[in-house]
Length: 207
Length: 404
Image (tube, rainbow over all chains, first blue to last red; front, side, top):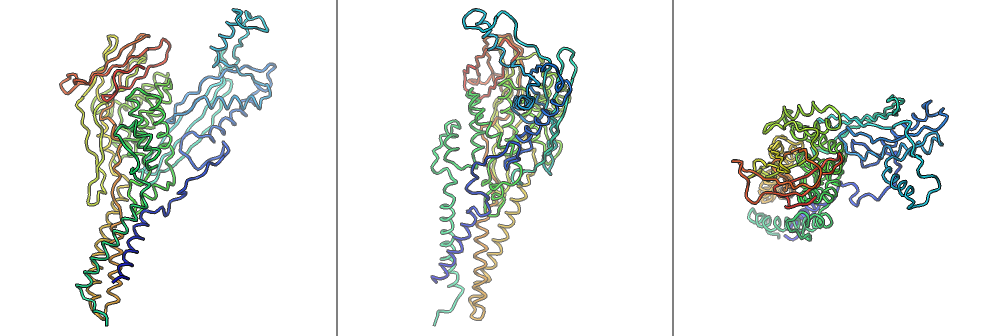
């Protein structure tokens, strides 16, 4: 009887262990931190706005702006103020990151062809000027002279999206549009767009 | 000479071997899965106390569930930063659920329960995660990101079995349209959708000059339970609320907060899941292997009792035992993990208030429009002089008074 008892016990234990074990589970120990390029599509992805989109879009916009005659051939570097990007998609995003990367790309590639004004720091700048005017801090120039520059252009953008979700999956299209606006005339002197469409389907257990 | 195999002897053998084998298997199962349990996780029932411990020591698959619970509990404490901390992580995980997933694959397997999957919640739970995250974005002065969350919430509800229940959250559509019009766009379409789908109450035309947004919810939301022979059918129940509406009083202004969406209704109108088919197949497999096991064991026992069919009988008997074990280890049970501190009703009021300190009170009213005793909430706030919106969340389970 003992051999049968042993066999049955072994079969039962093996079967139950197999039901509980991690057989078929990929990376049961996880994946170590992997350094990737910002424009690379990683293994953690969604259908939303991701770093590779940010890089691709801002690279394209920077090239497009620098090829603009009003910028490329300007006698004096035009002064640009960044206006917040509008998010009209279904993806919550850090909006300023687009303009930050666009500004740094232009600054690094334009070689002085454009100048950006730090309007987001105006409160601190005005406070500093007032302290100089009051003699609370030193000044290398006459603080009573107005030296804050006005903008030649406003640079702004908008993200708009369109979503389709069916049993076959989710499809997200995002249109990234950027504009350079002349604040004196309200003319749109430059505009360009980038489009990215992504589709995905979640595992059946989440459907 | 060996004792001949008799039916009685085989029966005795089965009685001896099967329980022993199953016991060994169960011990193995318990030992193998010990790290997946809450055995060493002391829980108090307070999500804000339990979540950090459960996230650190409990099963990783429940992380998002604890983040949901703790995020909402933090909102009710008036701790918006903590709520953001929890909900941000949950929403990020929700946004990246496409493609292969190891835990999901395991949950689909015959021998793993659905609850082995990484919890993301049923669509109504995912919608609510985005809804609350949207409130927090608006609170932080980012109405466009709030609108993005409300839109994603509506998308999460869009693959219902019946199209008429797809994307039918009244408040999400309304807020989409309302924020769009406040940002200078045309929100008419979204507001029309909200009015068309409204079943309980239609949202009024709140003025774009409103500068204080009050999000309210009340009642106990749905809970999940399993039915069917093996608990393979997911069902929802609950949905009780002594409060049928609320009224917001501040600086002489009065806002009626009627329920625009019923979360139990949303949970129950989603229709069948793809996973329900997987679980139904598992249930059929479990029944079939059990029946095959029964037949094989009885047949094998009879065959083994005859000297000339003894070998075939033993083989059949073995197949029967294996089949019974396979049946016993097949787990068609539905996942009933629930975000149980969700409300039943959600509502919204927009008010136009002068700048400066204000005291806002919320009374929750019963079916006869009488204030529920002990349920009044008080929030002290300061309305800024600039154009920023003040966004407040108040629940019948909120801590009171709160100073924001």
